[in-house]
Image 1 (cartoon, helix red, strand yellow):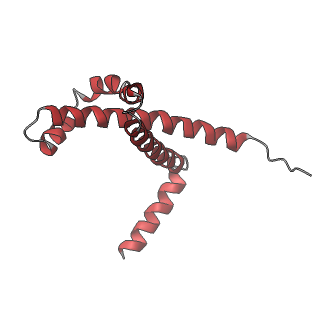
Image 2: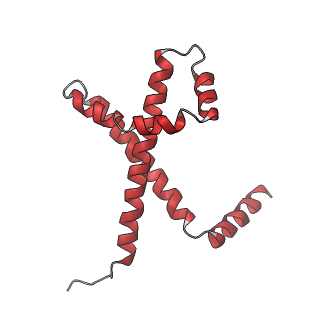
Image 3: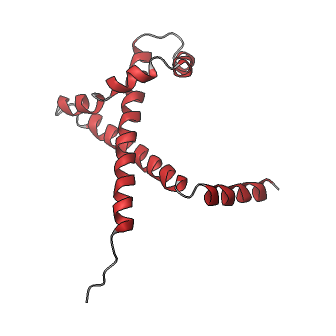
Length: 124
């Protein structure tokens, strides 16, 4: 019964909001790309320290927004109750991941929009 309800809800939301599937797909792809970039940045950090600094640089703008967001503070206190440097690192890395997710997700939406508009041509 639950499966039928979920399938009908999925059909309804796809019909009502046709672009939301593309937005969610772009958000997921952006998150995967941001996570991969973060892993790569910290993997090569011993060789080039600038790479990890560039990855963490956009976190400052997101921190200003998330710093005043009460549920984010409660989540941080719940995950790291004693606070200190561990909580700071968690907030900085989460902010960097969020900012790069937004960047890569936006790039994916733009790329997919251009790909949709391009006429399909045959070679040969």
